[in-house]
Every structure is written in structure tokens, then in C-alpha cells.
Length: 259
Image (tube, rainbow, N blue to C red; front, side):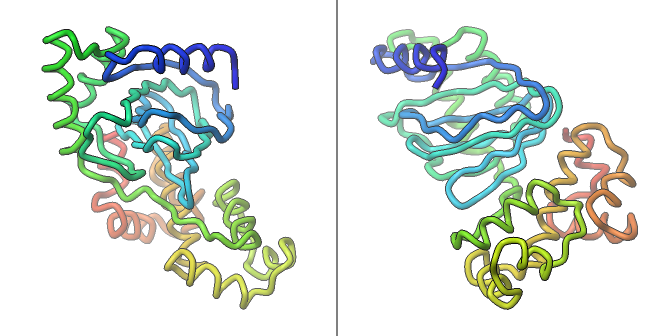
């Protein structure tokens, strides 16, 4: 843990009247924040760039316009795509929040302005009437924010998990399941059984969703829909658009506008 992060954590733990803390940070593409935990709940919002967040047995892609909520004590790591501008809010565990589990939410225009306002004033103090009113609206907006299906379940078995992380690192690669099985010391049949039993999806369906979710990163970075389709392993743009709409409820072009 860096000295700066240690000082930040020490500060929030020594201020009992603070009901929200904030942190603004920028990261270069490819930067990785190694696995760590916080004593406070955390809402991570990216105003530029995209992030892959690993927590518990899930992976999330966080494009601009989305935020991930992580409960206190949840170990997580983050990988940056593009130049990332991160805005984070921290909430004490004593504060009643409408969400308690890991999830990705769409950041509404009002929620965005609330996050940026808290970052601007650094923290909310429960002794200040204006701050208490702002906190109430902030909590309401977090509770009303729609959840986005950008979650990828990960298998628990170490062999299957190694295969999953391999695919997550190179989602457009054409490795067959037989090749991955040989690489990570498991039979094809074993991997098929593990993925179906531990993620609820066959390996083929799981990899398809990984590719679809990864294509959101490409769209967020300004890639054309055609490039996102072929980079995601689809042989035609129409097949990609149909799968994208079926999974996320909107077309890739519409998602680009939301980003």
C-alpha cells in the first residue's frame, strides 16, 4: 500500500463526522491497482477511459457513464483501459445505503453531478445541514440507478479460473478449449463441466459474453462498431449487433452515445 493511500485511510478513520469521502485520480492505460480492500463502502465512477474490476468471483467492465459499487471488505483489483479519470466516493459502514452487494450501475445525469459535487468539496460532514441534504439526495440517486448487465461470473476451480483469466486477458484470441485445456492441465470435458456448474454457462456462451463485454471497452475508446464486432470474434456486424442488443438491451451505436 502506498504512503498516500495509507494517509488517506488514516484520515477517514479518524474523522467520525464524515459521512462521505471522495478521491479523484488519473491513471494511464494498462495501469493495474493490485488487489486490496477498504473499511468503507466504495462507489467507483470513471468519467473517461474504461476499467476492468475484479472482485469476489466476478469481473466487471466499467465504461464511461457507469459506476461500480463495492461493499466494505470486498477484495478487488482494477485494470485501466485508455487514459482513465476516476472519481470515487467512500461511505462508512454505519451509513444505511440502498445497495449492499457488488454491482455496476448506470450513472444518471443527476447522480453524475452529485458525485462531482462531493469530489469538489472533498467530503460531506454530518454536522453541516447542507451536506446532510446533499447526502440524502445522493443516497436516493444511488438506489434509483439502474443496474447494468456487465458482470462476468468466474469459476472457483483453480484450473478453470486460470482459463477464465486467460480469456479475459485476450478475449479476441482464437484459442480452442482443447488448447486451453492442455495449457492449464485439465481435460476439455472437465473444463466444460466446471464452467457450466460454476458460472451457469457453457464455456462457449461464457466466452461470447466476455467478448461482448470487452467490445464495450472498444466502443468506449472510440472504435467503430465494425471494428468492435470483428475484434470480438464475430464474423459479421449484423450477428454482433443482434447479440449485443439481446444481451444489453440496446444497439452498440446507442451504447456509444451513452458512453
